Image (cartoon, rainbow, N blue to C red; front, top):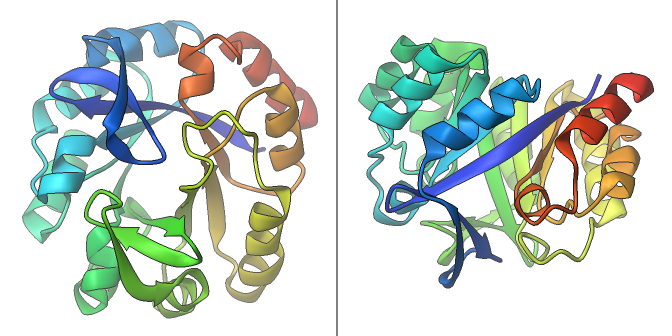
Length: 245
């Protein structure tokens, strides 16, 4: 069954959304990530996608206290990313009971480190690939790396990465809907080749998007702004995914 991952993107202690990763185009939705997590938990959500946007940009995650409060205060399975660059960061979050840690920038700037972490922590590591113009963006989406999407998957799936969280930056926060072919090709090409799983992020606007994505065999679907703007009713989305199976 494809799972729904509501997103809590944090900046300056608030729940926010950026438009296509632009820190100058930010909307604040709530001043408490913990309160938002409580709400999701009460609605029956099982998984949470938590992102430290300050950490993603500055290379230093400060989200440990928020993650601890959510893990201890809810039944949500939490994945977290943003500024996680060292093994100490990984150990700190996993020791709290975080379900998995997302390596994004470091996954493509230091693949040797990433491969060691995959070997050590296995399914506790997910790879976050944020794609612009076919290449992996890094440092809070401010720069493009030398790795194309396919090159990064070939390298890291070949090293044992089981889960890739792939964001289509051009669609993120834009309320334009999903690029069907983009995610279908991921599953059909790389899922079939390596047996890895994919979580889709970027552009999920309504229940029709969720229905189509669930048909591709994805592990999960991340959505943020569509929930906060009231375009997706969480209860309806969860029911839809259960019906699809």
